[in-house]
Length: 292
Image 1 (cartoon, rainbow, N blue to C red):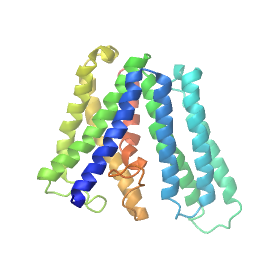
Image 2: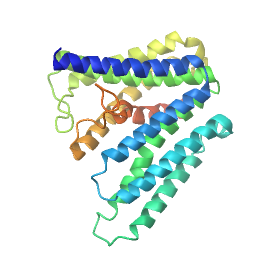
Image 3: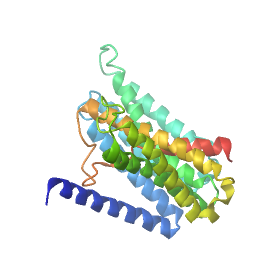
């Protein structure tokens, strides 16, 4: 077996395992299982981010951010399942409280160190970014997105639409770029990405979004016109591309190929969640401001 065939087999295996787990949770129809899965994925991504940035100065600030992030994920997910947090979707008090605690603690820890120019602030900034990146942009927004329609079935269908559209963006960029990609888009960040791939990915995004919309149309009655699906598809496609490139910037700045090795053939958890960290919040705010 060639190395390319082995890599494809590993990627296929990881993909099937992940989608099997996700499908099982969605078919269960239990919001508690869904929220628990999102919290666990967020926790794995947060731990992976901490490991990825171990060579950066300011370890004490990142440890503090890691602890606060894991507590936040546990309390936030519990709150949406067993308390009234789901009834106040626009009040981002838990997220803001967590960020304040992270920054306050990080600055307190920096009091032990001498001032050494801008480098003295970088650990605090990285601690804040570590808290926002996966715990908030992914886990918190996915959970909030699932509660927007007000019904479990509709909420899960909405999340599935956004996730499928996002992953179809990644798939379209890879497939179209591999087949006909000639013009490099941003070679200094991601040499493999092409303009042809990005253009093709937008068509894949629309196909994924409308595929879920028509398969579960009875769950999208609250959405009204299918025009909203098309608009969300465009926004998801663009934000997913930025999310993917954002992680590329992070990895290239740290001189690593993959964020981890948790998923054979894919890489780490961040490699799986990167595009969702931007696509989900964008979809959420579009729905809040233009639909609900």
